[in-house]
Length: 112
Image 1 (tube, one colour):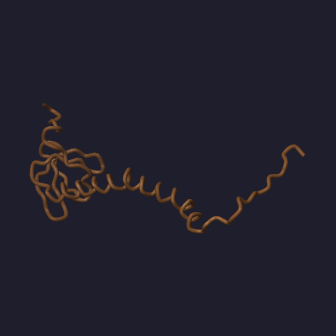
Image 2 (cartoon, rainbow, N blue to C red; image 1 turned 180 degrees about the horizontal axis):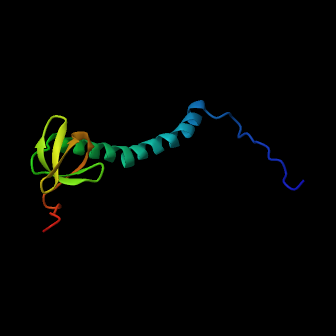
């Protein structure tokens, strides 16, 4: 036989059950805590900021829809927003489909 069999050895007394459980569940808890602080918490913060921006949507705000349409808000209702995507071309979108509200300093008109 090329590989000899391995036998378990006891170190005298049986290990404590709580110490065994902590050593088993401890790393899983550490991974969950790291996952929460690195992934979930920043995502929740971003979602809250977007919901706040959509709730405070007003005329002349530059927005990007989830479909990638960039435009300027012309009119806002409770559920819908009317967006001007080109001169004299207006579309009506559901407010929940707005993916981003751009700041006036970052958005530049396409023809200027």
